[in-house]
Image 1: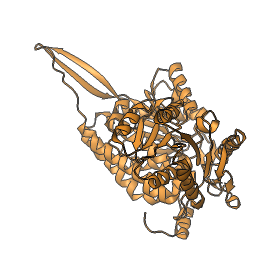
Image 2: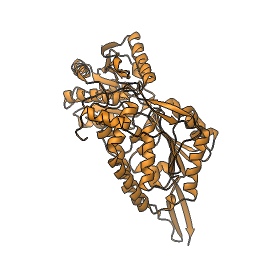
Image 3: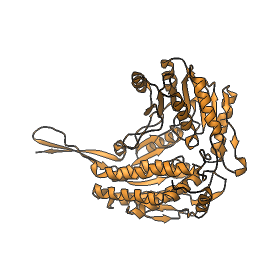
Image 4: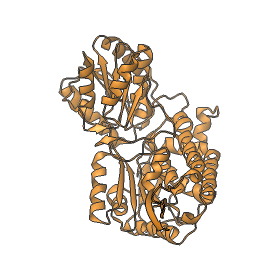
Length: 496
């Protein structure tokens, strides 16, 4: 990130021209006149009144996407031409990087250094990667009998409804939108009502980059109305959702009650992070465990919220994490020195505090944190929190908290560690720290998780798929495998 002072960022934030209208059919659309208030969690101030989509606005967006798919040029463009436009989106995201990072920090509380250096990097790289992939997808011609020719072709699936959360508003939008566009689909994107502003800017940028009208539409509103309307819409062919497991169930019901649209879900997590005594570097393992749970205020579906540590090294590891938690700088997201910003809002902060209170009532030992901080700012700030003495049956160990709250559990042998790790309804991610290659392979295979990190956490790039098992969802984002969600395979058999 450019070396900007806190005061310079504050001035830039005041000058931001934040959008207020839906982006439909290549233009801003004010909708029916209703609006909702976007409040910044950094100080409780109103950022913008934003158009609140009713079913009528969703109908407009879906109709635009349907026209663009059925009769527009996008699905019929040469893949290389689609790729060039996606590459142009990446270029414009880079040009507007500081503005987008500021917007994200203001709307959901992420530190500006993370918004600029991690969130925007991921979004830019995603559009660039799928832009480069667009003309490299191949069809198949299986070998069959000599008197026939068999072709298996990929065809774009149609109109995609993409509903994404607030914790990584542009990254997760990009993970849905870029592969869908590369495949030739058109998209209706609904961001969270907590973070609509960056998504509306993405819609404008995509149009500026050359996407034809209707190819990417952005509607803003809440889940029970706008999200439901997308889920039930008979002209939406594919629904891609990232969010809670509870809401994922709703989208499956919407599909069953409408047109049986396919539904791809990336849902909650309660990820285990296993530290064995033979970890190659216990200090690094502890530091990474602390970073993983406190990064992005703990508001990550993959957050390693269950630390499973061998009893022989538990005290040493836990003390290092507690020390890091106490020194972590919680502060204004627009201050480049801030390491942990604000939680997304008051309602979410209260839910996290409720989990903390229940943990204490159930007998877990609070080692540090567990309370609000910076109350004079008007923002939604929480001290990094660590519990030990956590029993596997406690809410702390079972439920997704989605905040900077770590639960420490101990074990005495490897089989117990695997049992504890898998004793959850979720299966999104896991971590393992060991120097033994055989152990790394055996435990990774035994863990029921879509991603297993060994001697690291949250590493990877766009070449590898991301998604969950069990109640963490289905389907995959990232990599060439994401294209599978947005294409249909057609078999053509030609008798010669």
